[in-house]
Image 1 (tube, rainbow, N blue to C red):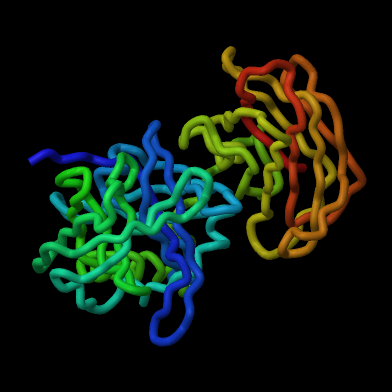
Image 2 (image 1 turned 120 degrees about the horizontal axis):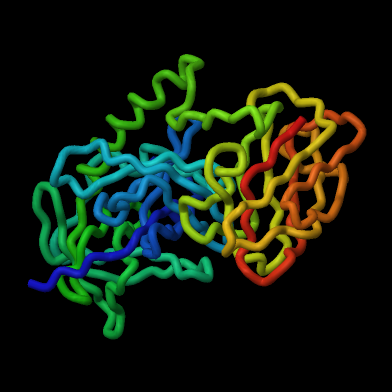
Amino acid sequence: MRILRFGLTIVIVAAAAVNGTRIAAQTVRIESAGETGHGFTIRHAGLCWVILPRHVAGDSRRVTVFSGAPVVHSAAMIETPFWDGMDLAIGQLRGAVEDRCTADLALISGAVRAETGGEVQLQRLRSSGEVERIPMQITRTDYLTLEAVVAKPGDELFKGTSGAFLFEGDRPIGMIIEAMTPTEGRFIRIEEIGQNISRRISRQAAPIAAGGGGALPVPEQSDNRASLAFEAVSAILPPLTPDQGEANLTGPGVYAFHLTRPNRIAFRVRGDAAAVLSRVRIEAAREEDLATPRDITVEVAADGAGQRARPFAMGVMGPDGVLELTGAPTSARWVYVTIRSAWDEAPVGLDAVSFH
């Protein structure tokens, strides 16, 4: 038997119905250590969670999640809390993709028919953000898994399919974990996924409901970084690798990206109260293979949604890789830093953005 392992993946369901209620959701794509794949996202107790096969995460702790069109990206921290031999992992998703996470835990709960001979569909996401639906037929079922074969000549379970979910009508019934041939796949049944994920995230959500901290700890900030408590939540351009994401700008590490267009990076104040901002300090990465930013603009927004942004300051970063932009003290819940150009054509690197 030839086993084909896939790259990494993640999903947010496409318009599904549970108990008569339409649930908007969408398929997403994941990149980790040069691999791509699929999975599934659900929202519970105000948090967005990504479900994926354990083998696609591998040793990666952080992955980059891409939504369907219009494509945005976010980082997710991956955990493998389940027992050995269970090809299942979970991670909390934060940032721009989190806003599209609408499927409830109920969507993966309860039994499904999933009978041999049943007509089903596998949902995948192209890099363009377009959702693919691959007709399949169930060939075998048992207590923990089921198997299905593609029903349309020419369709294949190509590399990167692992983690995609199988649907019977509007209900997910399984997640693909391996391809036995290019046209036949083995899936973990949704009942097995549902009971394990439910047990895990219900325990994680308990302290949040009681007013405690979230499942992901907020990175500590050193004295030379931010004196005002902001966190990076999204950026227009994806990182070169998942561990070089924009979240590093208010914690350890660098954010590196190809500057194919102006890159607007969003920072949100931690907590409910707005901060009084008068200075933003931007530091370039020191790595020789990364370019220094050049033209930079900063905007601020005081409203909770960050929709009413207004100019704060603009400037040119010099060869020393440090730019401090000052303005009149202003109330800010959101700060947007836009990198408009760089000093050369190499990927751009940022080390830190701090707020005062």
